[in-house]
Image 1 (cartoon, rainbow, N blue to C red):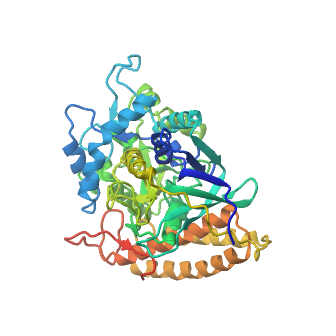
Image 2: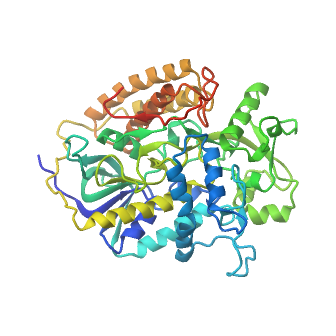
Image 3: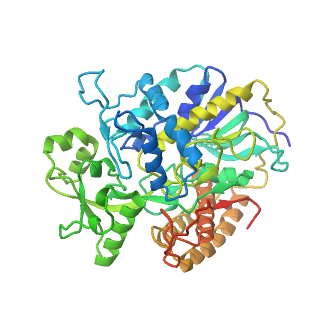
Length: 534
């Protein structure tokens, strides 16, 4: 059964955050680009990123220092070549955003020639964080969206899910990606895209946890699709839990940027006493994994619902000027951060592992790329350093664009694609099953595969995942797809990859802390999973 081709393009980009849109803009003068967005173009992790983007702009700073800070934060597991490549290209990539019109804050806001105002965040030894107040991601995303919409070579499909990649289905060495099946959420039907190249820019998988700072679209789609297509994944056990999300029933895990601590905010117990100096010499500016574990430890030790982040000792005008988004959000919930501390808890925030790529963002499958949080480039190692994430998006999107442009002229568009067969499925009348499985998965992942793990917890999680996979596979085989079903299918696959990676690591390192293996081994090796191998 041959498939009717709904869309043809040179490059299909699945995902519309900083990575996907940067790639689209770098390619648009050379290729016909199709961008797939699961929701509105502005909905994604980029839009909600508060802190900023790391790059060396201060004359007292150096690329060597940025490299060293990243390696230290990565707990011995970073790929030095990837770190050097990213940091060396940081300023050039940031300058591209500046030239595009992103309004990073300057020391003198009224002077466009003034030096950039640079924040310092956890793990950084210098001030090197360019930011747009406390809404950097919004400034970046809205600028990119405006440019993408204006380019005639870029077509945008909003409210579309990617279902699966279409490949040549040969051995991995010969395999090549030909396009993808996509689900039109408005028309509720599966459509087909034929493309010479496909880039995954789908973000991370933090929605696999009950509590997350991420928007709803972060369901691990690209990681699961690449795995099903035959790509290796790496370091999936390293899930970063942001230490400070606002604890409030109406806050929906609202993120409180690391820049607060960079500007002097301190963490306190409910009795008002500080605790971070007890855990690390850098106190509140320790790496995120240290801070998250410290908060988790104090909450469990005291039986407390939350800890507190306090910046009220700083001048009120300073707080309102530097953190207007946070100030307004908290004030709307009855918390005046110029006068009182903010209740905080950790929440799943960033997936440090992902689809394994080289320095061109190329995956194991020819013509398939992965950029941004979906990828495992080697930059983050066992713990991502603050504000290196948006940097990775822009740097590796440019690297992918350069590699694609070199191959574009000789690439072939394959139109003889296998058809999408819905002849044996029906509409579901038991959507409640998806909801039950959804909640069960996220709850036991939080309880068993969270900030602190044990062998027994991981084994329990894996048993439940295997049962869920059987149930979801049966459901997927008999009923037409839906948004919730597609996301659940991907999340349960990513959950398995996280647990298997965690079980493979017989030590505690960075973001992975196992009470049964509390020591850190002398030699660090990435956790690599290969499809077809147990």
